[in-house]
Length: 532
Image (tube, rainbow, N blue to C red; front, top):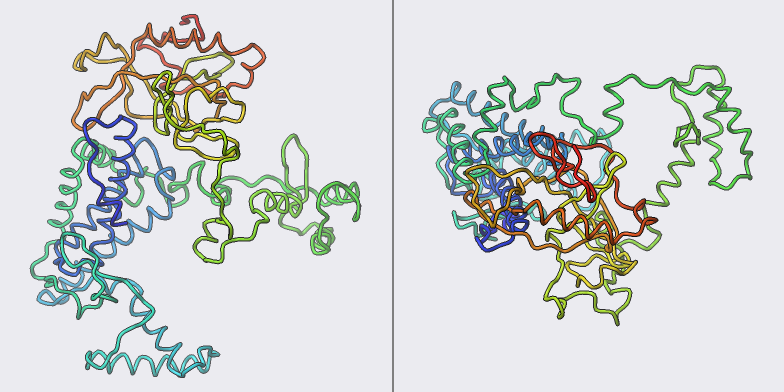
């Protein structure tokens, strides 16, 4: 995480797509930094710790609500946990100031550190006998508490933990040091006196820190808009507890809790379906005896759930069969990595990263045109939308050659059938009066992209090199001319055979920015023609 929040700002000469990605990573790193430093930088005062936590809460709210991102920015439960963590710290300090205004407060004690230490003592208090039943556990817990009380009176007797390892950050330079192993109140060097802390001052300081760190992202305006609407960080969209923050990307079970469940399939229909596929026959995986038993036990009509699921077109399939097919599709039969973290990440035990055709070098600059298409570059393609074809300016997210991902490819290999490209559509809007005049450009990228991530053949991609300008500080953007976009659309659309046009990526419903249109509602590019 330290490497992410240490990323430098992008250079003025960098490509707009690289600048956008770099700024996004720096904002994510800032969230990591403000969440982590209050617990690992042992020189921070209590006031500075609260300021960092305030900045983390404001930044998480901004990321979660901007452009209605929700779970596309982070899972809803993660956002909720961050807000609860910050709220708990501020509330605990406010209550401590009332009870002991001249005392001290250690934020590092708000976590489960003491519980983990106690668990370690319980597990190791009787040599190799680490397991315990309920009766033995009660005795060990009482003995562990006595040991911890003795260690609190005589800290020099405590040898410390050996397996728990949370290294501290010694100073503002962010240097991680090994001498600070497991952080405790005795190892904290910052001023933690409650009399020198004002929660409201630290809260406002955190917000100011964030606004000064990212002055061109509109954080202040976005947060003020939420405040104007009467929303808060617990419910940033104004919902109640039942419809809090779930959207289409959240867990389907959570969404089903908020809506009316469909009527379960009747027992008679379930039995009829099973009779249509007897045990030992059929082209799919067989049901277990437990599955058949669950169907039989539902004959009395008291079963709560349907044993079948609709897989489309009204076709009902037993859930066990669907789960087996999903497991077969999602999990590889190749042996997993012996390292636990790599195995959880889905990495195999033997990983090879060779190109399918070693003799064919598809990467590198085209010597004839001095061009190369890289991930993050702009390009043009044709998109189907509501039965019509439109030009789309896109950003390349991934380049695939025979199922192998590439960072770049020579444009002359885009015609290969094995090349596919993943992309997102740029939101292109008309220029304003205060925008720079770039060779007569009348359209610009507003630095946002459509939510949909699409894929197309490489042959449907046209490499472009639009003009770049910096209308705002540290916010370069692409600029386009209408006649150039029309020419690209005409050339690209005419190069696609009639039978291949049905394979063009399809955006089922138009959005507020695509297809590209003027303020009067006129589409600037519809295949070759202009339509209103």
